[in-house]
Image (tube, rainbow, N blue to C red; front, side):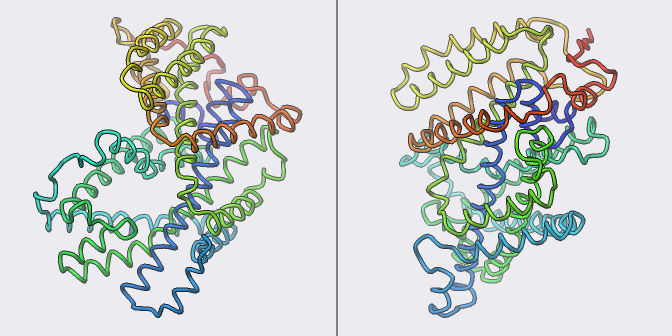
Length: 459
């Protein structure tokens, strides 16, 4: 879905821009708030993780005195090293985009080579006995799903690519290619690294703070342990830097549409604001308190993106599709919550979601399901099997959300309610553009001048 929408709407803002064009102002405003969780708060989480790794590295590898360690870990949830890395990355972005890009590229390549080194090293030390049991009984299938929610933080790079789409060259071609390539590379590295780590050290002994270094150390490969520990400390800040680069682009898009004050239309102003907020969260808020909240927000943003693609594909402008999408989202959410918290009785509700998805398909151009025609456009990548693929994505997102704590889901509802109130208090009054009627978006979406998605069908 992202691959097609990024080619059709190569504008700053990622899911926000897609929701703005397809669904309107309020859904776009809510989406922007969810993306802020993805970019800003996840950056804060990485900064805190880096701070913990630095302390661990200093204590274990460099044998720094406990007096100095107590300064870096004063307690009360305060993380001075997370504050330091947040400030440095913010200053680097304020220094200039060109310099930030050079630093990002340099450390990204180092990070890729480090992951490859750790993965290869893990397979060299691989012990097949560590893979038993394949699914730990104390976690089970539910534990695998919970783990997938935590691990998808490593897949958010493709959304960062979409958020800077306005600066891309030949976006109709390059953005879908970048997204698919990014996902393939990250997925392969993530799976390979996870398997090699578990194969190198039994899963109950893996360190949550310093997995690979401790695993190498347990296999008496000290030099590899020291190298990976130092590598993690050196390369992890690049993730924080990318968060600071991306968040101002989202604010820039919103300011251009009048949803937030025009002061945010200046990238450096947005970077300063985002940097201050990220520094405060990274310094004072333990991420364990916000883990489920942030995860749920990101999944909601993904769901809205799926809805946007379905709306963009409709053959005629009417409100029936929006009502069907609302029903599908509601039925999917209820079904998944019952499945997760009540039992298998929830499966009896899935036919309803399937039926609604079929009704949605009647409003979209022909797909290959029961029809020999495919929706193909000559200028940009098109997602196959729409609306079935987006609807499946929405259902999976809700299933993952249902695995989260009720506290996290409730906190998200409150957060979304605040977004709605802010929209009606400011955004709806200051709005300067109107979705499909905005000439900027229409030119981006269809260079031949058509605003409604063209019915480009090849038999």
